[in-house]
Amino acid sequence: MAELISAGSKWVLPIFLVGIPLYGYLRRVDVYAAFVEGAQAGFWTAIKTIPFMIAILTALAVFRASGALDWLLRILAPLGQALHLPGEIIPLLILRPLSGSASLAYTADLMRAFGPDSLVGRLGSAVQGSTDTTFFVLTVYFGAVGVKNVRYAVAVGLMGDVAGFIGALVVTSLFYS
Image (spheres, rainbow, N blue to C red):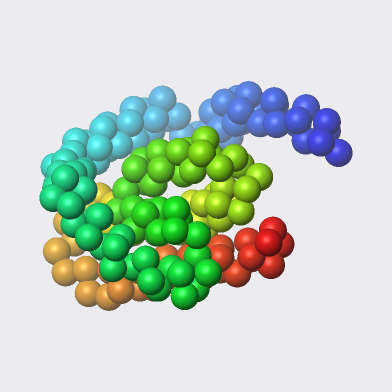
């Protein structure tokens, strides 16, 4: 089965590269003009998001450099112990909603230190896969479309992250401890 999937996956991209222009031709769509128009829109969207990305990355750097991250980790340590949460995972729980690259780098460090088959490695992977970069997503996407009032998006996004953390902890504990 794995060999069949591997062989089939090699043909997915060529099928799309040939299939989409062919489908457009059959529907009498100027595929090249549509592609160029979409590329221009994507370029300007990327340009519009740069200030928001700089703002969130600067805020994250200030958060880490000011010592606020270390202070927050000291406060959360007793809660982590009460939940039988490995202390090494707590920084990942804080970094993940803020920055995908920072949390990925931290997860890679966990893998190097503890190994991918350890409880910490598996829990880090589960957290990485079951949560999102809430503040980064809200900053970039809401900024790109000009949303000024986020209303309940932050609260709902953070509740989703907490649910992802709890789910990752429960599933990892059930299967790997």
